[in-house]
Length: 162
Image (cartoon, rainbow, N blue to C red):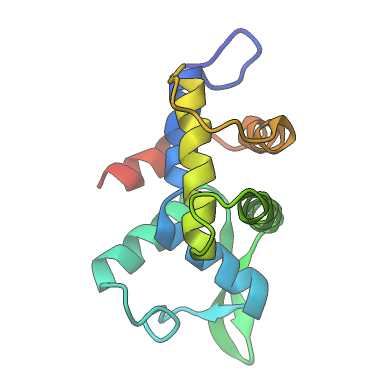
């Protein structure tokens, strides 16, 4: 991972982390646990539309980013959000609220699409892309703060590339 003098990831690396956080299955996993509580280790019942390979991938990425941990719920092994996962879920919610209030990307779309759109625009803005959406600086600042307190994301990004 390339870092700046302040110890934060370089803009290109930060954009790559944001793109990872914008993966639709990751958004769904984090918000599912946040909204409905722990999910069983067998993720397929909670996400019947996702193939097993994608479920493994999103689980591995969430673990590598420190978003989920293994615990027990109702006596069964389950995935729970960590404090970092809860903070990201809150950021996803704030992002979706902002996007909905500004009809981004359209007036009628899903939560995941709203978060994904704004996060993609954040990543583009870090790459000095002129097409970046003028999203609120406070959301981007919160996201950058979240990233700066992350463990080394290299492992998660390797999971993302797999």
